[in-house]
Length: 344
Image (tube, rainbow, N blue to C red; front, side):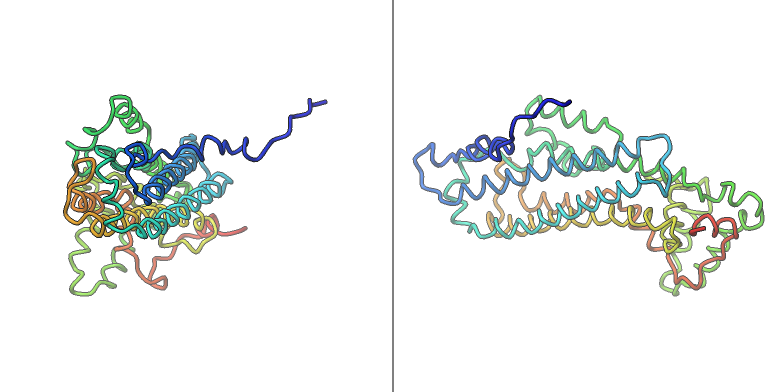
């Protein structure tokens, strides 16, 4: 018989004494009246709590894809999709939360802004960790020289440790490469003609669908999906992974591919929500401090805009939509492949 657990009290369970006493305005320490500093603190504490939850969800998804075998129709993929949906919903909340912060005017912020230096949201280790675990590499970060210069030695190490982890983008590439319906799989083995000809058939249909203004797309298609020796070395997704991702997008209506397609779509949604958050932040900073430098020494809105333009993590998936075409023009698939993608 299990021993009886002691009763759980609401405030103790949520550690409310710690949370509700964690707001220590700098203005109060200096005897300065700055009524909006409390809002500023609580907003940023809330962001950090949501960042913690996002990291929790991302790590669960990473654990799923770290497995040596992840079936496309297993509960694991469903779980990953649910987790990524939650991340998207949280990011949407973070974007909307800026509206609350924008109720603080520029003059309200000036009442306590100088007391914050050199503290800055740029020093958020959790946000940097989110970016790293999703797949943003140090080499692709805007302002590399500034990236860790404002961090303590301990936090700098935490960021570097996160960058050594296998990112979700790397795991996604591995999973896509193992896709069971790839053209070299057993489902195509007895259909040598179809196997050899699928991407050529697709190329012909795609070429016919292009307008004269889009003719250059065909050369890019050949580079990505036909020619093996000219595949761009800077791409994070391999040629095999890119092919399989496009295949999922094209034939998403079949039951086996619905969850994989939803997973790819959610990764694009994460990129979009992060971009929206950055752009809302840019406009808020512009309204609040104009062209002043950030409290941490960055160029303020200019830095944020440059980061927003360059920190798209799953852009290679988004670019694949350039090669989609109407369903009725898609190449016919061998019966074994159709059977494998449908409910039996």
